[in-house]
Length: 98
Image 1 (cartoon, rainbow, N blue to C red):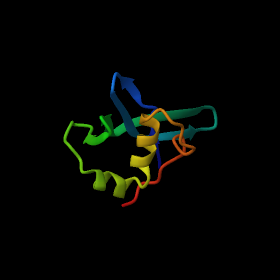
Image 2 (image 1 turned 180 degrees about the vertical axis):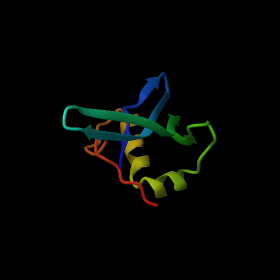
Image 3 (image 1 turned 30 degrees about the vertical axis):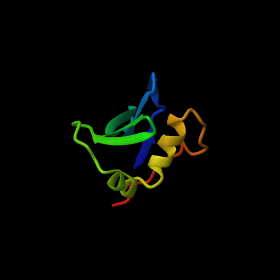
Image 4 (image 1 turned 90 degrees about the vertical axis):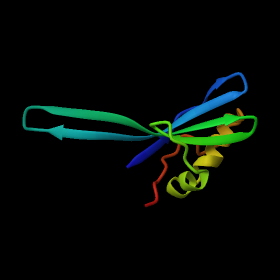
């Protein structure tokens, strides 16, 4: 499984980004080959006045500790990207902990 953090979208002093599960599948027969791609949003991260918030895809608040436990390093990646700085791992794959 691959988890990706989108580049933040900034509107004034507010920024948000989406953490998604991304997958690519390959299907083939003797005469046909096909690929299927999907990207499913999981968590919305927000940044305003140095305050980070996290919400599930239904809009319910999530504890930052829970998000960090499930996706180690995600809060720092978002904070760095939300500040307009480049973090070397912003485009890296994330591993979900169970």
